[in-house]
Amino acid sequence: MFVSDNLNINENGHLTIGGIDAVELAQQYGTPLYVMDEQVVRSACSRFRDSIEKYYDGQGLVCYASKAFSCLEMCRIIQSEGIGLDAVSIGELYTAVKAGVDVKKIGFHGNNKTNEELCYAVDCGVGHIIVDNISELERLEKIAEEKGVKQHIMLRIKPGIDAHTHDFVKTGQIDSKFGFALETGEAFEAAKQAISCGNVELMGLHCHIGSQIFDIAPFEEAAKVMLNLIAQIKKELNYEIKGLNLGGGFGIKYLNEHDPAPFETYMERVSKVVKSTCAELGVEQPFIFIEPGRSIAAPAGTTLYTVGARKEIPDIRTYISVDGGMCDNPRYALYKSEYEAVIANKAAEERTEKVTIAGKCCESGDLIGENMPLQHAESGDILAVCATGAYNYSMSSNYNRICRPAVVFVNKGESRIAVKRETPDDIIRNDI
Ligand SMILES: *Cc1c(COP(=O)(O)O)cnc(C)c1O
Image (cartoon, rainbow, N blue to C red; front, side, top):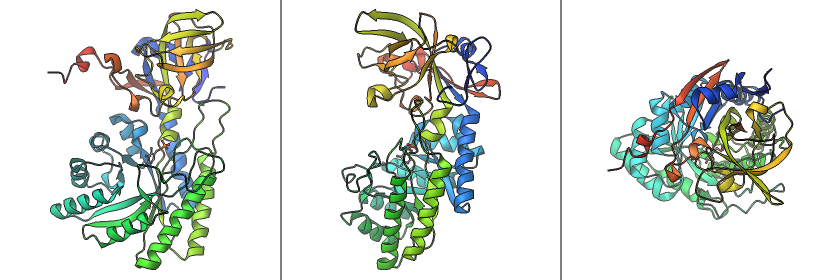
C-alpha cells in the first residue's frame, strides 16, 4: 500500500507507523517529528547478516554506515544486532563509542581525516581505518608509531565503476575525491607503501561505488576488479590481502515504481562472483565487509509535519506549506529526491491532488517535493513523508535558526523519545 511496509491504515482512516497512530504521535510529541521504527532497522540488519551466513559461509561483517542516521539509540540497536559500524568523523565515532558499539567492529572513514581524528580513532582501538590518501597513510604511520601500536588499515580504491548508469562505464570514476585510482597504478603503489610501513597492517582493500543503486551488476564488476588488484599484489609483492570491503549503496524504495534488488539476491550473486574469481585468480577467499547505510535506516523513518498555509496559484500550482522543510530534509533541494507523501489523518482517502510541498525556510528551493500526489490538504492536517530514515536527520541544519525536530522510536506498539526536540536555548548554546 505504502512504500514502507511498516505503514498501514487503522479503523479511523489514520496512517499507522509500526502499528501506532501517526496522528497520535504528532499530538504526543509535536511536529515536525522523525519517527523511526526499530523493527524495520532490526529486520534489515538481520537480513544482511543472514545473507552473509547463507551465501558466504558467514565469512563477512556488516558495518552500518552511520552517516545515514546516527544517534546513541540507533548505535545501541546496531550493537545489539551484533553488526559493525562505519564512522566518518570524530562526532560519529564518539557517538558510537559512547553508545557502547564494539570498537573492534568499527571502521573509520573519511577523505580528509585530521590528525586529531586519527589519534582519537587509534586511541579508541577501532578495528580498521580506511586510508584514503598518501598524506593520511604517512600521518597515521607516525601516529601509530608514537603510540606504539600496529593499526589495521584498508585502502580506499576507486575501482573505476560508474554505478549510476545502467550500462556501467568502467572509467568514469577517476574524477572523484575519494581514494586511490586503479587505472593509473596509484592504488598499487599505495599498497606497496602501506605494506612497507611498520606500524600499520594492510588487512583489506575497500571500494564504495555509489548510492541508491538498483542493479547488482556494478557490484559484481567492482568485486572482480578489486580481486584482480588483490591478485596483482599477491603476485608482484608476495603479500596476501585478507579483507575485501565492498562498501554500501544498496537502493531502497522511495516511490512505488522503484524496484531495488533484494539484498539476498545481491549477496547470492556477489558471493558467487567472489568465489569464482578467487578460484580463477588463485587467491584466498577474502573476509568481506559490506557497508549499508540507507538500506538499513531509510525505510525505518517517517517524518510528520503539520500543514499550515495552502496557496493555490491558478494554472500554475498549489503550494502546501509545512512546519519543517529543507532544514530537516534537504534531499529535494540537494538532489531532487522524490518521496511518497500522505495526509496521516486522511490516509484512507484517495490522493486527488498534485501539489508542491514547501517548507518554512527563506529559500524558494525549500521544497519537500513537487507534483506530489496527495489527499486534499488543509491547514492543521498532519502530513507524513515516507522513507526518510536516512540522510534526513543526519543532514539536518539549523538554517534560519530553526530548531531540529525530535526523533522518536516506535517498537511493537510503544514509542519512546531518542533525541529531544531542540529549543531556542540549544540554538544559542555555543554563542558567546
Ligand atoms: C555513504 C557510504 C556508505 C553507505 O552508503 P549507502 O548508500 O547509504 O548504503 C558506505 N560506505 C562508504 C564509504 C560511504 O561513503
